[in-house]
Image (spheres, rainbow, N blue to C red):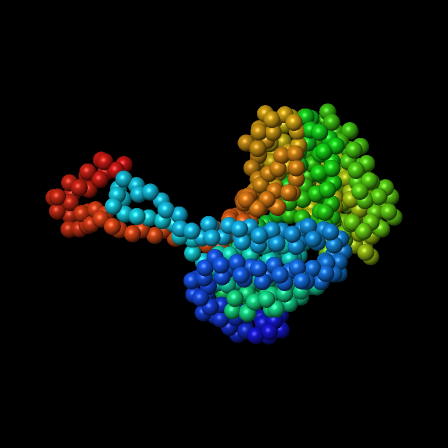
Length: 482
Ligand code: NAD
């Protein structure tokens, strides 16, 4: 079956014969994978790794064509994370797959028990446009490591990347193992009408809600990797040079079109002015001091499409109309979809930029005097995907970590927790549910099955009929085993 055959005609709400056939083929193949060993799965992962290395130049090209991404960013944020996931699985998969023995509880004396991580079966991975390779192939590595078949649905907003993902998969795997269905919301909806054994969705909170609703019909378990407004707290005890280096280095990668990008800066009033001075200087040093230099920077990507450009323009206009002031940037060009690295201060409550996920290179900065008020505010808002705190005062940092919830967090750093192969990556509440990466991703795509072997267990003594002897044993059970 070719990718073209799998591709769907738009407007059809039902899964067509072809998508259904693909699903059924994967379902019939799933039992073969269920029995696969760590070595089989690693061999499949290595094929994927080899294909990615071989297609590195094509991946760079697709990144440039779709959103002007610098090749270095593509290497670091698209290719490296997937190869790293493969390397982790190669090193640890046999251990992850090993059954985990659990000791018998007192009431279960005479039994042997263990947890076996078995494949879920046929999995669906729906991915966004901001890191198309990373967020399609990363979860795919976990799905393959866990012994599943998978269908990928990349984003239609980055068509060159989507086509290349389809090509790489078609060259590397037979469609009964892994296949790509290209298309937009229609294609995703048609896929979600099928009873997948797991749905792994990365994208916006609004669409995540719809995915969860569609999955509820079967029901399919879901992992939702969503977005949100990740706060970046600059305490008065922070090393400001280090802080702005991190902020500029992680906010403007892929020009802020990153799920864990710092979205809203809270800076302590005592260090605010110095922080802003250093932030502006750092932006100018990295991307140039005037609009022409910034537009010419080869290290700076573009907004993915016109709709998102207009959305960002709208957020900026709304903030300015409510009295915000630009302290750096502010240059926008609709033709090339360029938005300069822009820092805003004096924001009024009710500004949309303080409420909606920005997902672009606009950075609102608000000052605070009471750290506990910031912690409370974060707690009242939808739970963010990440939280960053910069400071040298341990007590104040722990207060933030204890008091403000988030999917993940970094102290004196930002974003790089995504790349730590031994940490779970996922959201909480509005920013999602479930985990990706390493063993956590493997577990997401596995079912943890309880297996009990009865050797000389005594549970049969409690079976009906409930004679006087059994009743006495039931009473003794309540007395001795609780
Ligand atoms: P999106 O939700 O618009 O689209 C994501 C995917 O869902 C695409 O493949 C799209 O075709 C598909 N889709 C669209 N409508 C659908 C529907 N009704 N039903 C099912 N699927 C549908 O997100 P996006 O604009 O591509 O990506 C940006 C968002 O993703 C941001 O909110 C960002 O924070 C989030 N994100 C999260 C992570 C993470 O790991 N948590 C990573 C990257 C991006």
